Length: 174
Image 1 (cartoon, one colour):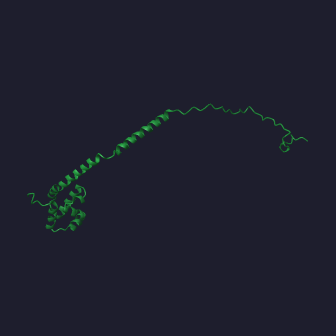
Image 2 (cartoon, one colour):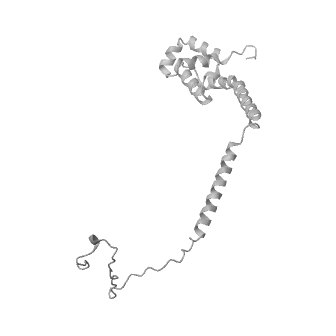
Image 3 (cartoon, one colour):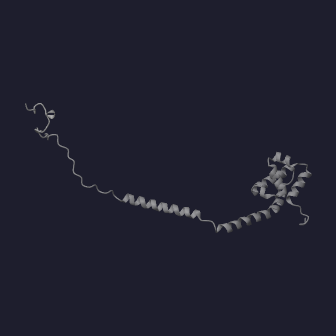
């Protein structure tokens, strides 16, 4: 087949399906592939479809349902999908090239912040453990009196200025 007479992949699938008397709805019911995906395959609208591996699975199920050789259809699919795949890869590389140099290195800032935090914590804990607490100032010793020693309270002397109501019975003067 020459390039001029070669039919597109989607047209090939549609013609084979129509020759065998299947509708897209019947294929969708039997394969559980969405009608939207089947229409996108026949229209070669690769943007609407998931990853290539899923498209290959869809084509294999499609062909097995209508009785078409899946290997031949997959070879045709590779030829039809290759330009889109190249364009998609080129677009991705261009986006990475253009935006890659302008991206702010957040990942490196996070790594640097974590290193600084670890260093600060290490410094803090190292010096926190090596410093000894300050020695207490000399406090007067608190001695408790021994049981054998009894201390007596000083004698209370009455003062003439003390009111009579505060004086005890023995201290009162007649």
